[in-house]
Amino acid sequence: MNNEKSEANQMGVMEKKEALETFFSPFLEAAKLGICEIVNEILNVDFYAFTYRYKDNDHGLLHMAILHRQERIFKIVKERNVYLHTWKGVSKGRKTDNLLHLAGQLAASSQVSGAALQMQRELQWFKAVESYVHPSLQEQRNKNNKTLREVFTEEHKELVEQGEKWMKGTAASYSVVAALIITIVFTAAFAVPGDNNNDGIPNFLHDIAFIVFVISDVLALFSSTASVLMFLAILTSRYSEDDFLVSLPRKLIIGLIALFFSIASMMAAFGATLYTFLFHSWNWTIVPILLLGCFPVTLFAILQFPLLVEIFFSTYRPSIPTTPNE
Image (cartoon, rainbow, N blue to C red; front, side):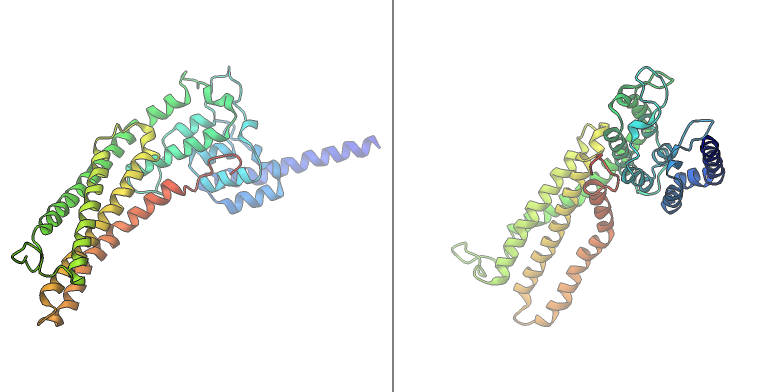
């Protein structure tokens, strides 16, 4: 009986060694590159593959996912309940790079465009890992006696400066357009189509086109003013690290939406004015002019909508899991 148990144990050790020799390199390389299909298949064959580690730096599955920002691998670990607090480095007294220090290191990313969005992505990764690991890791210092926040600040100092420059340049460009729209629609409000009668009342006061003009002009003025205020808030922001997480992207989203709405309202006011002047004798010109009026609105939407969508989903629907129970 004892011989049978001994032989079974030897067979188990041999199988583990064979699995390690077979799956070690493909498993960790797939984790590094974000090939979740290979990682899943190997974990299905050998669940304890998550314990595989490189000898030189002691990095394993989670380390690869965090260091190379592979969110799909991170989700696999979360779904399989491989909790980060069970990993090496939970000792408070031990000065070594833990998972949070790895999350604090700057990683090159091609998943987002622009320094500001990359900084937002880095913060999302840091917050996700911070909320997921054992609390004892959050105060641990590394071999250079630096806390995780100090590592993050030092690594991302240049990226913060680049993100600030990108945000200010973008906000300044949009604010010029918004200020120009304010000037146009404010002037148009006092240049009433069709002039006024002797009592100072607009001649086309009760025409539908005139009502459309007034409403569109007012909406254009208010929305362009709101967009200028949003862009001004971006220009005068403190630009701390955490501002890139939600505050600055949210202001940019609101400013872009308000700017688009102001452009559309301005063109609607322009179309209503033309209709007021031309519908009696030149009504055949109304349709082509209105179509031309839609051209700048459509062009703005085509050029700026992808950026707006990217910022919106990156801010409000991040693909990185942020809580253990998510």
